[in-house]
Each structure stands twice: as structure tokens, then as C-alpha cells.
Length: 261
Ligand code: GLP
Image 1 (tube, rainbow, N blue to C red):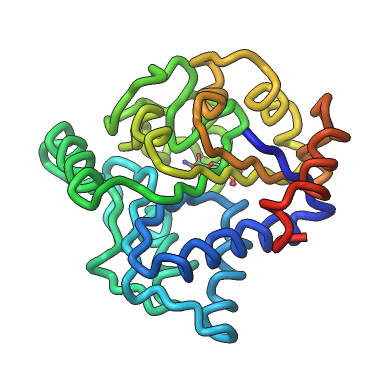
Image 2 (image 1 turned 120 degrees about the vertical axis):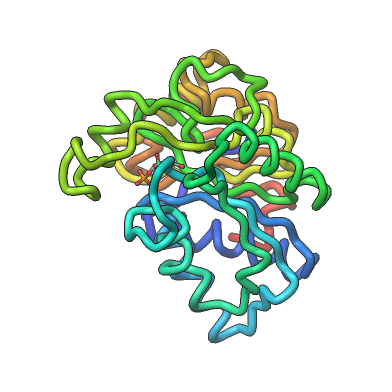
């Protein structure tokens, strides 16, 4: 795992978007794993800007999102399909037929989960998976105790997650109780993972995920098993990390990061 500390939320999101754009320019057929949440909105803003101003081309790119709520129509403003259309898809030249999210309206949810896994496999796996982190340490909707080898499946959301996301739904009673999510095992099979966390509300959970033990109580800690995972944080989200000086030295000195400094 590598940790990169950036001075601000904006700088952290800009760095993530530059990593994505470099991968996409290197491989126009990139299979890109996407995430939702307020943290990602800045990243998508940067990507849209790069598409408009620097001709970043998504026409051959295929995307797979991590998760989707069960029971929401794609047109529902709270569905992740709607989020993706709104924040990215409609503003860049992605072919919507190449964008994939689990179908939370499927009659047979289990079959839908298997279909999603099979589809990822058919495309040869995910090249670059973008990740956020929930306050309880989840990636996707892999709530505490998600098996570290879990695959795409339906997960019941924890009270913490429901509380965190309920304001978007106008109250807990309107919020779906379940979601389809890629499993932890699915996520760590991506060839590269980039996790973005910003703000002081993420400081504790970032420290647990990065420097704590690998545990299904903090599903993001499973990323420690990944051979190529970069965690990008702003100063606020880095606050509880013990080895900050070491991480800063790596970013300032290692040739891999030369183009990004
Ligand atoms: C939701 C998503 C996660 C995301 C998390 C954090 O739970 N399923 O993929 O990481 O929100 O969201 P935010 O960026 O708003 O803190």
C-alpha cells in the first residue's frame, strides 16, 4: 500500500483524476471501476474538465460501479445510476452501453449478482478500481464482517450507513435497507486500486484501514493484501496516521510519482 498526503480536498481529487487520465491515455480500452459518494464528486468534476479542455477520451472505456441500492429505479435521484449519469456519464463521451451498475430492481437479485460477476470476468477484470471509504470502514457496501473473500451479493446496510446516507433520502424511513455490492474479494482482484478519503470525519477510519490489522470489521483493511493499492488523503483525513513523514518522503522522492509532483 502507498499513502499520498495532499494539502487539500481539491488537490487530493485532482491527483486521483490525473492517475485515471494517465491510465486511460495509456489504454483507451481501460476497464474502470467507479465509486459514488460525495468525496468522488470532485474527481468527476476534474475528469469532466479534462475531457472538455484536454480531450480526455472515454469513447472506448468500459466502466463497472461498485454498488447500487436495492429497489430504486435508475431514474430515482438517489440511485447510483442517477448519480453517475449526473456527475460523469452525461458530461463525457462514455458510451452508456459501456457503463455498468448492478441492477437493484432485478426480480432475481442473486442471479443479478452472479451476472455482474460474470460480466466483469468477460471483460477481463477491472484495470483500475476507484474507491471511497465509509465512516465504518466499508468499501462499496461491504459493511463490517463482510467476508474478505466475498463476491458481488446483496448486503443489509448497517444503522451507521443508514444514518449517514438517510439525509439524501429525506429520512431513514425512505432509505433502502439493502444494496448490491461487489464483494471485498471482487474488489481486490482489480489490477490497481485507488482509494480517496478526505475530511476529518475519515481520519480515524483511514488510520485503521491503513495502519491497523486486517479485519473484516474494517473492510478497507483488506486492501493491505493488494499488490498495487494507492490511498490518497488530504491533511485532515491523514491526521491520525502514524507514519506521515515516511509517506511524504516516498511521494517526494520515488520515481513512480515524479510525473505527479
Ligand atoms: C457510500 C458508498 C461508498 C462510499 C461511501 C462514502 O456508502 N457505497 O462506496 O465510499 O458512501 O461516501 P462519502 O464520500 O460521501 O463519504
